[in-house]
Amino acid sequence: MFLDRQSLWHHLRKWESLAANADGPFRLRFGTLFVADADAARNVLVDSADNYVPQSGFFRLGPAPLSRALRAEASHELLKILASHDLRASFDVDSAIREAGDRYGRLRHQRWGVQVVRRYFAPVIAHRRHSEINSLVDAYVTSSIIADDIVGHAVRSAHRSVPVIRAGLTEQLALQPAKNGDAQDLVDMVMRLSGQLSLTDRAQLLQRIVLATVGFTGVTLEWVVLLGVQHGYNDPALRPEQVRPLVKEALRIYPTAWRLARVAATDHEVAGVPVRAGEHILIGTHALHRSATVWDQPLDFRPARWERPTRDQKRSYLPFGKGEEMCPANGFAVQALEHLSHLALRNYQGTVRLRRQKPHARTLLAPPAGWTRLTRRAQADRQD
Image (cartoon, rainbow, N blue to C red; front, top):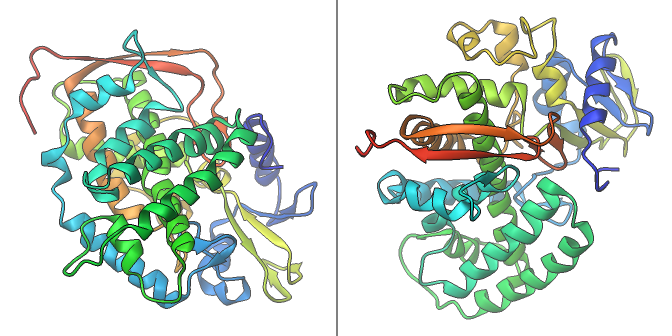
């Protein structure tokens, strides 16, 4: 079902409606147990996590996650690499926005955010010395992350291209010389991970981390800028601290990771509902974030709600998941989003045109088809 070529948005809205009228978890038409309650979700993700097959959205090979020790090692090394780069100082936002625009200067939704974030994290993903690897990463971003995970109109093409790109990455990783010292980028990181990992395994890990770093962050950047322009935050006086609630509210009302999936490893219960080993559990992040019992006017974009969020709201807010399998991009992705959104909304005058009104839901929850135009403010030539 999730490989349907069309947007799944109407399914999400239907599940939200069912959740609003349900007294606890319920089964969807195809048998999956749907969870849209904060207590039940946290029980699945944290309290009773041992009842589920270990998994990781990004630190995995095929459906099997890396060992707990390897996941910890990879997360630690990723944070060290990020800390070693001053991305804010090295990033040329004007050049990135020009490059992401079409010949008319329009930033096409479901594409431009990923392209800008790819460029932002370029020094972290692969140093310039890795010219062939960078070309393969660009091809992966275009043919898989954008074409399949976001747009979904080129599924067959994407499924053909991903193995070819992985094979190319494998060949290039085999040419990497042994290096001493700290890892400088993700290429170094995947090559230095301990364990019996083949070069193909390491190439696959590189692809998955790029998806976490670039795909999810890029789509959210589009949402923040689009909503910021529409709701009057596109202002040269915008302060950095004002952007944080914009990011939090964009991730609340349009969570890029709109569901968290788990597979039961044992027979047990979720909020009184029996679950058998092998059954699938789907935590509807979008439904949790839009529950009228938790959020006042849940479908309205209201960043001010984050000035004093309630305990229930904090517990119901899960844009990156929770527990040991929490998305590895959560910390640095938010920092990047706050910085890039501030640059775009403060330094550029924005206009938005939508060809459709409904969001586009595939692997990621993306803005409606259309475009945003960002025009540099003449008076805002100062640097951060």
